[in-house]
Image (tube, rainbow, N blue to C red):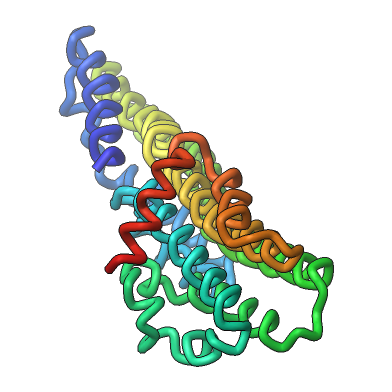
Length: 286
């Protein structure tokens, strides 16, 4: 929703200011210029990326027009889930969670948190490391190193669409210049026309440069920044799981281990100690 609001503000400020200065909006309507700019940029985008990058970028685009799902409530659910898992381990032993880990879809423990259960990658991350903890053959240092590598891989994969969209935006001003040059060429081949008509042709040519810059910095470029912010938020989920499980491996009680995870969160979403404690109690009573 904020993306649409931002686009409206950009359009209102740019075209509104132009109109208030006495400019004629009709002169800016140059669909062929848009065709040259967007067509050239999309063609270069296809040439410069492999199939996996194209698929990842197309898959990421719809998420840009949705609000963030990484809310305080979601993080509190994650910490409550981890607390329940670690409490069960502490009370009944490591093998007590084996069925939950092997079948998280049907686990009564995981089923209490449908928003988390719907995130396949997060569930896989949690259950994989719980499975390693059940095996008992890895120390905390080894698990931490493996977690760091997996989180880094997740971050690199998430950056693929960020870089693709950023490069697409970077190319638009150049294609705007290409469209403007083509317009100048068209003007020069009609140099015998009266000055008034030549002025119109030159104005049409300059629109190409204007559109290329506007589309790059007003529309496409900001999307890469937004996508990067969303990626950082998703990575924070994995870092929270990492901190909590490592604290448990190092011998801390579930309540203290969850506190390690709570401290990883951004201050805007981090619940207070008492607030989280109350949420955990409510979750356990379900």
